[in-house]
Length: 590
Image 1 (tube, rainbow, N blue to C red):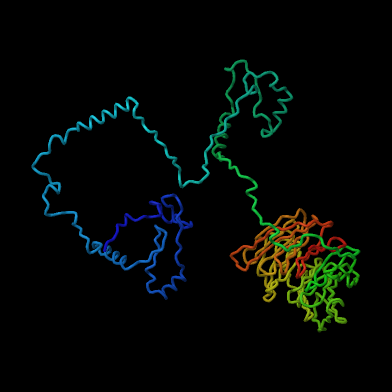
Image 2 (spheres, rainbow, N blue to C red):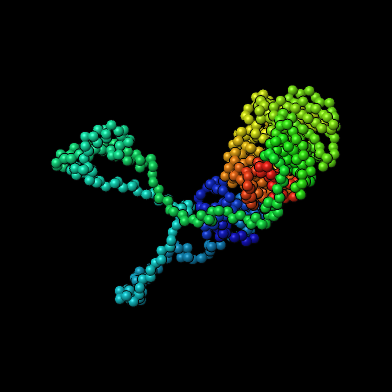
């Protein structure tokens, strides 16, 4: 069997005596002859090794050649060579270690010498070579043969950084002027008032560190008393703050801006004002769509609640309350509208929607809320005024927010089927509650305080997670997937949180110039909308993928200008329409 010499094999990785441990945290093994990186060949993990051991009896034959960055399978011939080398035997049966020597040859072939002396011409220089060298020397002397210019190859250090740092010398001292002279002109000398003013000032506030003086001769000038101190301070500055000359990089500022895709490729999304819902005499505080998108409910500052036909803008029903209505919210499953007016929460159905009568149930005693049932409608009385309501996705539970209540009783969770109310905060809870939201799939409840977003598990009744990094949130909502949380804050920022990734914001959108008022997500389309006091509505395309390794795609699409600052914006459940509460009107954008 013939075997090639290993020294003749081409080796890709050329790192010399550099330890391979230097490349443990890198994605490459080293460099080849051309200076290019040689990527690592990843071997199987422990699970793959275990599977291969159980399935392939010859798994041990598969090895990785790190010097050539490739996988090798050991053959029978290779095994035979390895066994022969380990046994210290010649490689191959036909290999003769004494093939270069002939024991029967004469002794002069072994370099032992003979009795015959070498001829004299072997010690003298050649005559013809001397003549040829003389001709070449004469041609060089006459200029017939010119020496070729050697082109110096540009040598650079392969292992250094691209930007070379050059140490700059120390800055030069400022040359002395007339004021530093031992015989300065008269106008540079201080008067008595200027001398007194200079002496009264703090040394740090003096314009000059010395007072100009006049001497008749240079030999009469005394030694400078601060020379040692100033020299020491200069040496100390040069030692502590070394200066480096950095080459200026010429970069086009426009090239740093990322190229966003064309918004036209992400249609449909709201683009223009289609109609206005006119009829309220007071400022509209809250709007909400019916679960199938057929109706739109609104409540204003005068305590008037109106039911509109979403497609035409026609007012179908209207009712009045004694207190101003701060929030209206449709049940996501049943035709029930929750209305917040003062200390009461009204749960009622309307004739325009499907007639529905809430079944009567004996309410449980609670010191936080009192339930009253009358003619298929429910009235819940709380201890303080209610400002916000949100429903759970299944329609049985809803929560209310009373901002003037004590900290532990601000958020109350109600059960419609049981007529029960209970709080979720303990007495030790601190911080004002700003907003709240239910998780669409899991029994989780999000509560936004002034600095954090607290996540409670309603089944276990425990605080499971806390999100940080926000400043005075106005409203929070969850994505339809439930894995992302959006918070609109008073510091003009929209924060995007990933529930499983981190407790800090995943993305921050500082597009609004003034405080945000609301953030809304669409249930069917990958759309997000925000409203702010800067009289704008921002529309975003937010595509969330099921693959956790792929990051969400978030692209700003359109900025809609409004006449009045919108207090709330809301997407249609089925269509890519956006409704906003602007003053006494409700505007619909399609």
